[in-house]
Amino acid sequence: MEELIQMIRRGDRAALARAISLVEDGAPGSRELVRAAYRTPRNSRVIGITGAPGVGKSSLVDGIVDQLRSAGRSVAVIAVDPSSPFTGGAILGDRVRMKRRTTDPQVFFRSLASRGHLGGLTRATGDVLTLVGVAGFDDVLVETVGAGQSEVDVMKYASTVLVVLTPGLGDSVQTLKAGILEIGDVFVVNKADLPGADRTGAELEMMLDMRPQGGWRPPVIKTVATSGVGLDELARAIDAHYEYLKSSGNLKTRVRNRFLASIEDYLKREMVDKVLKAASTSGELERCLAALEAGEDDPASVASRLAARYLTAGPCSPLVRSEG
Ligand SMILES: Nc1nc2c(ncn2[C@@H]2O[C@H](COP(=O)(O)OP(=O)(O)OP(=O)(O)O)[C@@H](O)[C@H]2O)c(=O)[nH]1
Ligand SMILES: [Mg+2]
Image (cartoon, rainbow, N blue to C red):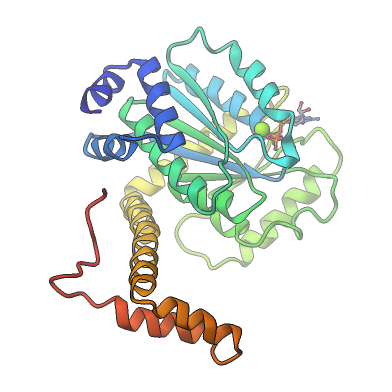
């Protein structure tokens, strides 16, 4: 695995693709691989792109890749869950579209299919981003359909988050998924060639003005991804946000928060495993379930009791065990 990491570091794209597959499948040795990846310097800028199905995220990614390539930067694109029920056919379109880039060694494209298990998508994406970072790309673009919590959670891994909307839906700004407005660093009104772009832009500006001020005020940028209008402005906004993160010290905070979120994620799993295993071995879990069935207890009380009993940090029961 150490050797595979070295190959990725030297720019071997086939090795990178293989490593991503191992992580995606949770194959034997993949934890070891990720562990080695975390111990290798990574300095990629991670740009997240999220928004409702069909707003033009992939088209924008395409345009942004062009912008970044003209600036001489290498780019990896990770499209998360393009096989969602909303976007059945998109994966094919994405593949065809990105095909013309396969001749450019400074562009790497990969789709990640959601394996459907809760939290697994976020975790796998974080690991994949770490691997891509080892490959030394200047920029990593992550596209997710902002349809569910896990897709929004993926944006935790980005240092700059683009939230994409389209005009014409009238109330598109009002129907923004809760939480999406908060995570946006740059807002994009794509399909600005369609009627209503100015109104959508104005509504967004108004909502952003109502946010607590201080620090970075997200810009609202109108684009026509299919013809390239506004993409240079978008690229400048991405750069400006990154500069802001660096000069304000917030980049460090974001990276730390990302690590913290990751630790939290693993910790929850460790603790749940530990408590359930212990309670099951002792037979207590069975008794609790019987009490619940008989209407003599409730899940919250059971959980508190089990946690109090089995989450004791003694020398014989370390909270953190090494990965087996
Ligand atoms: N008129 C207009 N159409 C656009 C624009 N940008 C993208 N489209 C079209 O909108 C459709 C969806 O574009 P995609 O880039 O696949 O959108 P997406 O958000 O990636 O879609 P999913 O991944 O399926 O959620 C395609 O038919 C694009 O050609 C734009 O600026 N103006
Ligand atoms: Mg897409």
